[in-house]
Image (cartoon, rainbow, N blue to C red; front, side, top):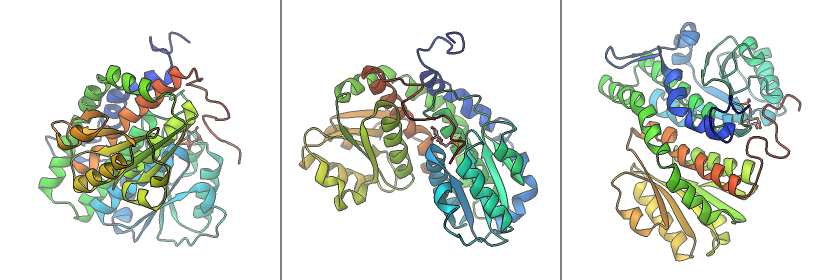
Length: 369
Ligand code: G6P
C-alpha cells in the first residue's frame, strides 16, 4: 500500500497532487491549441444532436453533482442551451418530464452509483438520448449509455473525490466548447482564448499545490471549528458547495456552501467570531459584489479565508487569511479555486486524527439505494 501511495501519507493527498497530470491526461488528444480545435471522439456522432438540443438534463450524486452544476454554467454560457441539474435520487422518483429530444448526461466517477443508473434507465425508457461522463472504464453506466466521454483521471481510491471532480469539469468544458463551435455560439477569438487558457491549467494547478505549506498553516488555525461557511457566486457557487462537502466528509466539521448573496437570508445569523467563512473572491464580474459580502461577514466578526487572484490588493487587505491563485478565463476558475479547499479539508482532517481515506459512514461508490 505504501508503494501505491507513491510516498504520500494518504491516497487523498496523492490524488490531490496528481491533478496537474490528471487534468492533462483528460484533455490529451482532445485539444489542439495551435490548430485551434477541440474534439471528444466518444460523442462525435451526437454533436449535431447536442448542438440542436432544446435542453440538456445532467444527473449525478455527491461531488459529481457539483461538477454538473459547474457544467450548467459552462453549457449555458458557451452553448446557450438550457441545462437542468438533478440529483439522481430525486429525479428517478419524481415522474420527471422527459421528451424524446432531451439529452440526459449522467456524471459518475465510479459509473456504478445505483441512483444514477436508475435515473438513466428511466430517461432511456422515455426515449431520451443518454450520455455518460465516467472515470472507470467499462463501468455499468459507461455500458448502458448511448455514448460518452471518459475522464481518464486514473483510479481514485480516497473516498473524498478530488481528481475525479477536476477531470469531470475538464470534460464538461471540452464538451461545451465542442458543442458551442458546432452551434456557432462561440466566436473564434474567444474560443482560442479559452483553449489556450485550458492548456495552461495543469501548470497553474501545480503552482497552487506549491502553496500547500501555507494552506496547512491556515488549516491549523481553524481545525477546531465546529461550523464553517463557504461562499461563492456564479460558477464559484458549486465550488463553495464542493468545498463544504469535502470538509464535512473527512473532518466531520459541519459546513455549508452558499451563494454569497443568499447569506443574508439565513446563514448570516450564524456568523460570530468563531466562524470561519471561506470565500471565493477571484477577479471577475461579481468581484465587487463578493467584496461587499466579505465586509458583511467582517462587520459580524466572522473570520474570512479568501481565495483571491494573484495581484489582488482589496480583499487581501480585509481578509484574515488569503490564498492567491493564478488568473485564468472566467469559465475555468473552478478548476483552480477548488484546489485550496481540497487541501484545507485534507489538513484539517489529518490534524483532527480522522481517517482521511476512509471516512466513517461513507463509501467510495454507493451501489445500493
Ligand atoms: C459517494 C462518494 C462520493 C461521490 C458520490 C457519487 O458518495 O463518496 O465521493 O461523489 O458517491 O459517486 P459517483 O461514482 O457516481 O461519482
